[in-house]
Amino acid sequence: LRAELRLSFTLTPPNTDSGAGGPASNNNNSSSAADGGSGVKKKKRLSQSEEDVIRLIGQHLNDLGLNQTVDLLMQESGCRLEHPSATKFRNHVIEGEWDKAESDLNELKALMHSPSAIVRMKFLLLQQKYLEYLEDGKVLEALQVLRAELTPLKYNTERIHILSGYLMCSHAEDLRAKAEWEGKGTASRTKLLDKLQSECSDSHGHMSVCTLADKQRIDISIYFLTSYYSKQFPCYTQQILTEHCNEVWFCKFSNDGTKLATGSKDTTVIVWQVDMDIQQLKLMKTLEGHAYGVSYLAWSPDDAYLIACGPDDCSELWLWNVQTGELRTKMSQSHEDSLTSVAWNPDGKRFVTGGQRGQFYQCDLDGNLLDSWEGVRVQCLWCLSDGRTVLASDTHQRIRGYNFEDLTDRNMYVIRVTEVLISHYYFNSKCICSVFLETSLQLF
Image 1 (cartoon, rainbow, N blue to C red):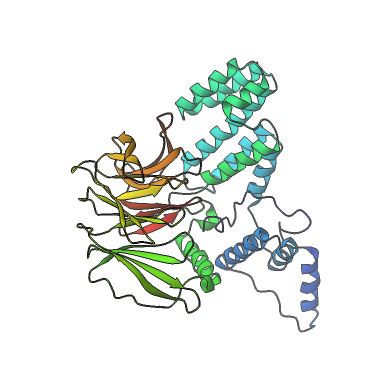
Image 2: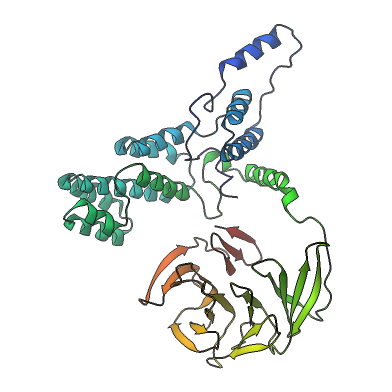
């Protein structure tokens, strides 16, 4: 949704052939034809909401590579695909004209809700400027940026200390390696634009620019997107499953999409076979004995195993062989534990599990403890493809990365929301979905 809601502050490359910036000359021809009484209706003046929808369509067409269609749409409607200040800002960043880009930020300040976003964006700009000076061997100029421009911002002091350490780099290759930076040029500046783009979003995932500041217009945009993609959403009931005899707390399809597992308060897990020909589910196996009920399920990467977890007061975890229906492992490290979440390592031989009582563990298929991490109140877990890093969302509204090999951890993301409680997160390889208690969900 964020990718589509870029209406008037997109940082993607513009179309330079014709009139994404406004009406073209053929508008004058059609206008004169209308004045001459040829029967052509005079062009209707569009409302702000209608212009927003047209920009939304233009963004989608642009993403599809239909540039000529975008040009025609912008010419005929008289709309701009992006705000002119954003265009100027983007061009100055790509060209490395940092003073001009910083001046552009002052123009953009009026278009954004959060003053702190401008400070963060300015910090990112000056950081790039500082690194480029260092790479070019302009140490005095870099030092001036650090002392007179970055430090007075009084933002991210820890990062400034790290940046100051780069002054000791003996050559450009050493700088790029230590800073994990691509070096001066289009690649690093394009990545900078991506970071700047993310800073233009408010805490609700909407663009903080003037044309989306009005909630009514946001609602119109969301309505348009939902209408446009409605054929891709399930809109009617295909089948009602009644085999559980109590509340169903969790359900999850297998990775290959051929099976569905459902967990219930009735202490059972039911595995269903998906019949793709008739688009119906058939009961395959019932896995019993989960004394606390089943509130979370996780398929192994090859779908051979299924792990079931219980609610907050459950200290046990069940690992089932899906094909045979046999219980391979029933694990419990301590009766004081809360094992409410689990995630498989990509190798399919290990998994991590934990809960909100301050710990999570890495185990093998037999439930043997390989590693543990204490003091983490886990809400949800996910193993990255590198096989080493585990993402864990916690009760402090953070997502942190934990490396079991070198025993390091760091903040990956902090949800900037204080007025509501986050009740759960869901991860996959590309997205994070956070569920806010009784209010909404957000996709990052």
